[in-house]
Amino acid sequence: MILVVPLSAVAAPYAAYVVDARTGEVLHSRNADTRLHPASLTKMMTLYITFQAVEAGEISMDTMVRISQHAASEPPSKLGLKAGQKIKLRYLVRAAAVKSANDAATAIGEALAGSEAAFARRMNRTAKALGMTRTTFKNAHGLTESGHMSTARDMTILGRHVIYDYPQYYNLFSRKTADAGVRTVTHTNSRLLSAYRGADGIKTGYTRAAGFNLVASAERGNERVIATVFGGRSTASRNAKVAELLDLGFRRAPSRAPLRKPKKPGVQHNEPIVVAGRSTSDGKAGKTIRIMTAVKRSLRPLSRPAPTVAPEPAPVVVAMKDDILQALTEANASKPTAVQTALAAAAASPPPAAIPASIAPRTSLKPAARPKDVVLASVAPQRRPEPEVVTRVSTSGGRHWGINVGRYPSRYKAERVLLTTALNEMSTLDGTLRKVVRRTSGFDANFMGMSRETADLACRRLAARKVTCFMIGPAS
Image (cartoon, rainbow, N blue to C red; front, side, top):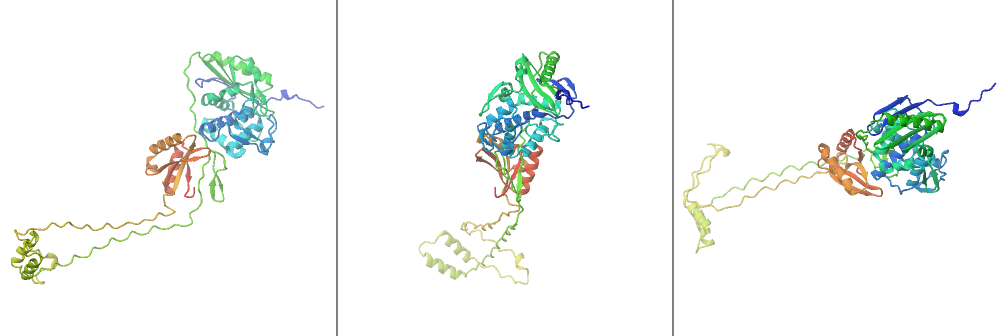
């Protein structure tokens, strides 16, 4: 005898979590840290990273995204995009948020990171920055995949960040219908949005392995509650359970509570990829080229030239007084100058007695006392020319390297980040050149004029401060 069990009776593990959205206070918890399949709740992270990228200037909502064969071949739910088709990012965002379209989510991931696998790694870095400690993403849409797991607590954390970090986009999750470019789509949770007072999102999810999942938020007056359910038996029973949990949350939440928004994390930029010894981006916006090639030539700087030894002064020859007087007379017989008068007076004095060389070495001889009536001529001393120092910068230790600290939507923002970074990291960035380079997708903030060792040290120190940093080689 074969027993046929209806799908609705095969329930996935159940978990629930309810928080006061204003403070993050836990109001109810059951199996909240059990790792389960999140299904399309995954798309909250895909959309969160999209909002980050738009804010950081990596991409814009009007960017035309080309649909790959991989994205077009994703199973339903989908928008029905074709391989090679181009569509604005804003329509993909609407399709992913409202209809939970898998092809749209995959296309978003590929547009931001080059491939879905690279995007999944960025999702995991972002999850870690948000405090989602028990979540691992493998794809951008949430279809069942080995190791693709999360918890009710982590998804609630993500939902709270979506609400408070990007309120300008949160209205997407309450739209019952939306224009997705190729057609109008309907919200997957329009029943709860219509039936529960104050409900305004956030995301549904269903796969056979996950069951019926939902992260829901509702606002009534000054109160906002987030309720998350994993493993519902059906859409109706899940919605009923979520409504029950939201009611519980509003009963337990205080009517007045301070708003303590979660801390917004920094952008987790895409990883550079190494090709043929050179680290380069995949051609998408917001990447930085980082040279990793080995130095093939190492020219040593030329030695400094030895200082030129000044020649010894020529010996002073004192003429006899008769010869001096004759020269003065021939030069200006009518009116001798002051110098000539002084020389004549000196010549009239008896010469000092000669000292035998055997009495004392030449260095120890003291000159004869100068006559008191001698008038000296002022002669400006000649300074020995400074030796010219010639240096040559080597390619191994030369200051041809730099670092990139991000790409920003405006030159002003890039310059402000450069100034702030320089002030915070003066020990390694002192003396560098702050340079803003305009790209098609924004403005790169670079520090140039560094040695390779200094650039590497600066990047490691900035990374410790959670500041994104990539080295830029001499050929960049």
